[in-house]
Each structure stands twice: as C-alpha cells, then as structure tokens.
Length: 180
Image 1 (cartoon, rainbow, N blue to C red):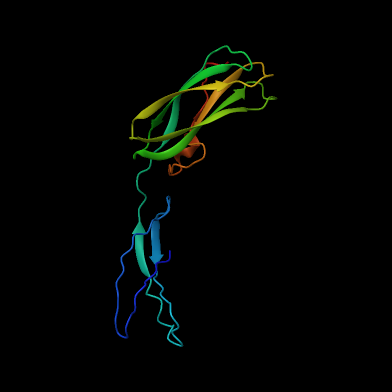
Image 2 (spheres, one colour):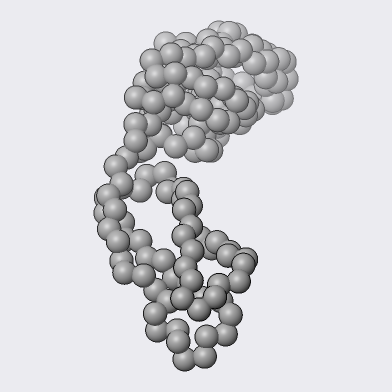
C-alpha cells in the first residue's frame, strides 16, 4: 500500500506514521514487512530509503461455514409455472457470517442425459451467528419444454463472496428423498 506525507521535512527532522493494513482472508504464518520511502529529488542519497525487514506472525481467525440443511419443493409441477422453493441455511462455523452473499437455485435432472437448469440467485445481507441459520422461500418459474423428474439444488454463498476458510465445498445439498 502507498501512503502520502504532505508536509515539509527539514534536515534532521523525522515523522512517525501509524497505519492500519488489511490482511487478505486466508493468509497465515510469518509475513515480512518492509517500509520504503522516497519522494522529492534526493540526488545520490537514495540508498537508505528502505527499513529493516520485520517479521510478524498472522494467525487465522475463526470463519463461518454456511451449509444448506433443508430444501422443500412441490413433488409435482407443470412446465412454465411458478413454484415455491424453501430452504434453510445454517452457519456451522466458529464465527458469524456477515456481509452479502447469494444463494443459487437449480433443477438437477435425474436423467443424466439432460442438463441442469438455473432457476435464480437470491442475495442475503445479514449477520448469521455461529450455530444459527436462516430460512428462505422464493417463487421461481420453471422453464417451458421440460419433463421428467428433477431435484432442486440450492448452493449457498455460490459466488464465494463470504470467506469460509476452505469450507465452501459443503455449500450445496440435493434433497435425497423428493423429486419434482
């Protein structure tokens, strides 16, 4: 990051600056910090513009772990009609899920020769404490010209906008006992 100092600095004077630096999610272990300065023309006096390297240790903080736990959809529907799909997401992580993320809803055919159908994406802007969850119901429109059995699939945090420290692999669930 770059920080600007806008003030004169007389010969022999110094200044101190304290800054907050955001460390990206998922970074842990030893990091090495060096401060470099420069600015106005210094002629040949540029060999002292870098600080010594300082080592700091970063520990991962607890993260949320969103999981789809229940999905409810009708067992019969007609192509081109609207149906209500309900699902429940629980935060099984050790920290609150906070911010904006999306849940995506799909129809997955039981016939492997057919393709999965995207039905919609729905944003959540909330804080879900560890161990708690949220219930959502959305009305989606089935496409025309489909037939046969399908299962509803819901993927929470489908665009990975909420950091889950490697736990995103469990963000979807297919109901194992009901099909449309």
